[in-house]
Length: 135
Image (cartoon, rainbow, N blue to C red; front, side, top):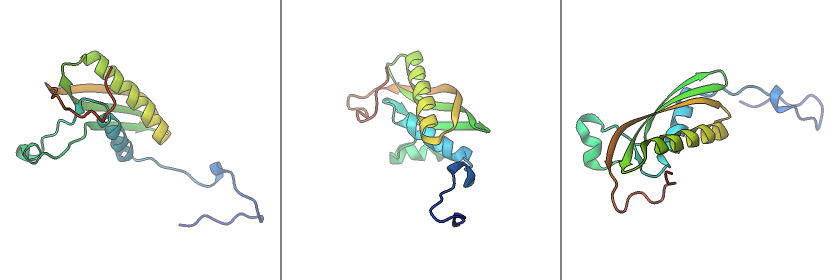
C-alpha cells in the first residue's frame, strides 16, 4: 500500500498521523529468543520429534512465550544452561538483557521476564565463545 500524498506541496505529515503499527506476539517471541540465545552458555531445550534434532546437531534457540497487553509485554523464557554457573546470576543476566533489548528493538515496554531453567549440561572447553558472557 502507498501512503496518501500530502495535501500541500512540501508538507510532510507528522509520524503519529500516518497510521499505526501492530506488533504480533510472534515477533516479540522471536526477538526475545534471539536475545537469550546470544547470551553465553545458554541453549534451547526442545529436542524435536523423538530427539531427532539432537541427532542431526541442529541449533535450537531458547523458547519464549509472550503476553502482549497494549504497549506492555510479559515474557516467560525457558532455557538450558551450561553448568557450572550461578543460576541466580544467570537468570538475572538473562532477565536484564531481555528486558532492555526487547524494549529497544520493538518499542514494547517489557514489564516482566520470568526465567525457567529447564536443564543443565556440563560446559565444554570450546563452548560458544562468540556469545556474550554470563556474570
